Length: 270
Image (cartoon, rainbow, N blue to C red):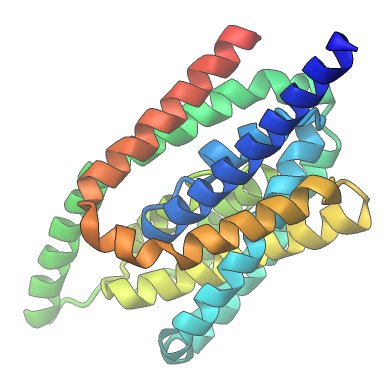
């Protein structure tokens, strides 16, 4: 009897952690990014196999990304030709990444998890300095443009660079938004609204095709996915006031600390 009540208590706490973690993930995704540092480990703690936990996390956070395209519809329309290219790269890369994930043995992926989390956390930590460097780079480009030396994006190399990032999105994806923005900036895009719009198109399509593949292949633990999806959506919706109250550097520091903490925990477990 004591054993049954102990198991029930543990199970209830796991559900509470899942809902709270995914709510916080929705908040983080809306105001700073990096929500997968919380939602993915939370789904894992429910006893879902590693590959299926990653697939479930992808499906749970994708609906929130779709609304981002609506928010950037004007900027997407202004860069429609490049948006189609980004969409194609996202579809192809996301398909390849999802296919490789589904063919990765569970034990192999579990050994990769702490390294993926560590890499994503370090990537997120570097986003601040790199963003400032890119801002200075774009400023110098604007000065050159004024002097008659415009920097036109090289479309084919950019396509393949976005393809590589989209592969990572289909396979794991944490911190991919920053990767997209960095690539677009390095290839000559200067307007932050255009960069965000193209990032959203590629990221949504890469995650969208992974969403379809995971659902069709029955890799989604729907029992936990629906709870995670609702909690993340509520977190994202309620994040507006939080975003105004907490400085961005503090939010970024929190995300990095969470990512490094989760990576350390998985290193310890393995």
